[in-house]
Length: 124
DNA sequence: CCCTGATTCGC
DNA sequence: GCGAATCAGG
Image 1 (tube, rainbow, N blue to C red):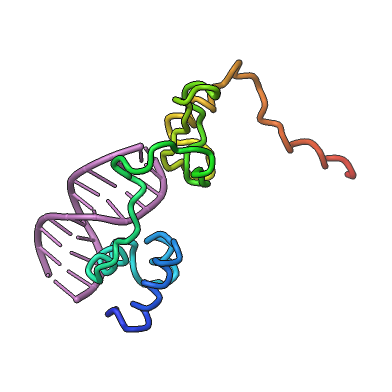
Image 2 (image 1 turned 90 degrees about the horizontal axis):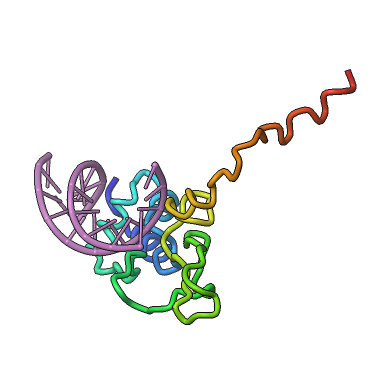
């Protein structure tokens, strides 16, 4: 699969729209996110700063929080030091791996695996 | 364990 | 030039 003009157009378009390499790769199809990033980089794009942000824009407030950002209140809510984790959260989880583990701390480990078990058993 | 992009390396 | 692999960061 060579990079046709239309595909490059989509690449730049989707990339400019804020889509991630994986999303673009999925949209384009046939290619992996590596191919997208590689091509994008070769094209001179890369205008999308990675979430790895070394040290730009301090103050990850709730305004900057996204689904992928770990929403874990660190510090004091009334202190200026209060900030959110900001790290890319796991799939579905509102927190990152570390904080997700904290949020998942079983406070008793009681039985609770019968959420939607016996509810429609009747009518037999 | 997941995600992300950046860079490097082999074809 | 292409894409995979690896790297860097959270």
